[in-house]
Amino acid sequence: MKRNFDLIRHILLKIEESDSERMTIDDFVTDEYSPKEISFHIRLLLDVNYIEATSIRTLGSPFEEFIVQRITMFGYEYLDSVRDPKIWTETKAKLQKATSSVSLEIVKSVATKIISGMLGI
Image (cartoon, helix red, strand yellow):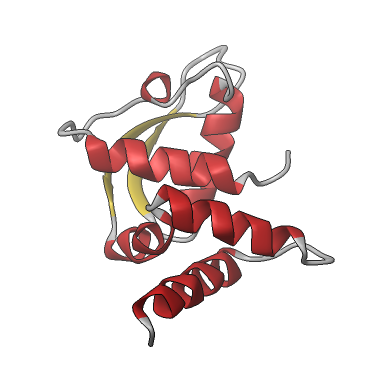
């Protein structure tokens, strides 16, 4: 499965919007994103310490289930750079020009440079 930066942003925004400390995969499902895709991306967010979540093994489930508790400081640092829809759109446009894959750090760096430019820094 390929990493989807739009889905990563979607998950972080949903966690931030929620008052719950017990979100499940169902809280993130849309017509665009399947439970299996969401599960994969929650695992990726755990890998980079952007969120805190507990894995729940459910017998017969085709994907890993999670209880998502919160965004970490690392997660907020990333989300702060991509939260604004205008910044996100411009960031994605710049990243499409890249000839190869990019990391989350590059995404954050590009968005931060766009924000800096808007601020005249």
